[in-house]
Image 1 (cartoon, one colour):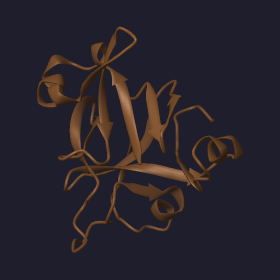
Image 2 (cartoon, one colour):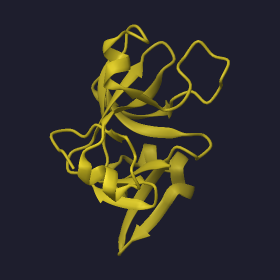
Image 3 (tube, one colour):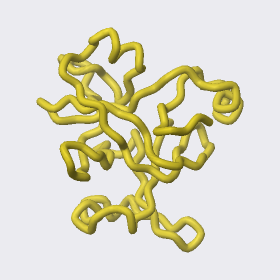
Image 4 (cartoon, one colour):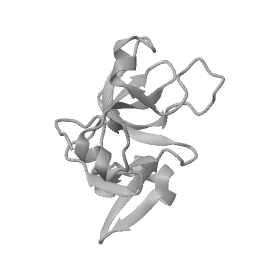
Length: 147
């Protein structure tokens, strides 16, 4: 499973209120965790000049929207969904298959404005990422960072 965490002090109070049950203490530093398995699944997103919480993907199989919370770079380039806008998902940590890793700037994503909802962009895993996560073939695309 994939999730992300951001230091709570980096989020405005208005965004922390709806996610109070997702706040955790990591060595004395309060962080908000956003996991794909949460209900509702949401992510903080820098979009349209502001930081807001958006629904993370689509969990309904019978929808015109792509099922899941992730799209590969190739799917976006192939036009699987029209009219997407690239965004940054602010995060300090990522989580995948039981392993936490440091994120320097954030995660790349795309928003479908008409919904609006956000998908995390994935690309082929590096050797290091595959070994770290138990051979996951795909990894989140990070902003100006390669693991």
